[in-house]
Image 1 (tube, rainbow, N blue to C red):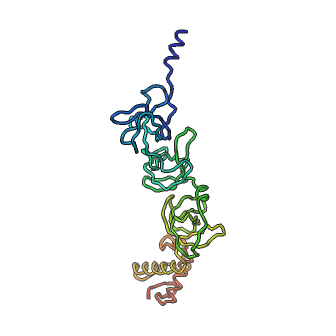
Image 2: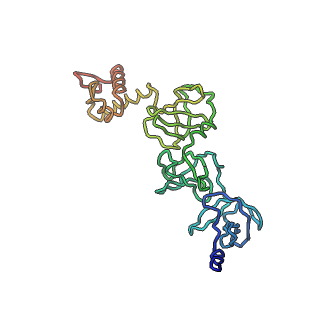
Image 3: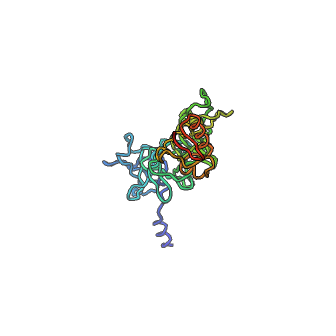
Length: 296
């Protein structure tokens, strides 16, 4: 019986608070370097420091203070009155602070970055990259973020207005699929870019300008990053002329050349190559003689 009583007296109460969480705690005492918040264990050694430098307004003993909890370099639970700029469930456009082998940490305005697990990444992210994220609370009660924000973007978006096909709009990428990428503008319009309509790889959060190619009934738009056929052809013609100028005025390809070789060496499709050749010939800038193409 005596042994049982000794064991009970040594039982410690585990702190109910976790790092990367929001808590409302009473101020237990004030010191010269900060306030100690009641850790909830009944043991003053478990009280949580709210350093003077982490206070956004003065606090007094007995006050209830809303704080963000995190671990300091010594792995001690510490408090800050700098709270996330987002509420749970809200989306924001923010910067990746660092990456680890477990995921990444992003800046939401708290003293420490909030964890972005690999499982919540549409694709890998890099330090310094700006991305769209949603703040949520995981099963353990800790704050975390996800890049899966498609439903939230649809909910806050609105139909486009005052634009027409051919106009240019600006936005940032918030989602990518096998079919292409989705962007949202400052006006909260949603644009879809089919994978055939952007020449290079796009990253989450990337800012870009695109040409409206179609306005849908729901008010969303289709976007292309490719120039119009007229502008593209002008560029292709310049490419062919530049290539010939660097190769003694001769173009070693013709309409019977392998499309792969044309794409590899000239950066255009065979159809675009033939269109550009036809216009150069029409403008009398080249000569075709027995299959050989030369600058005039």
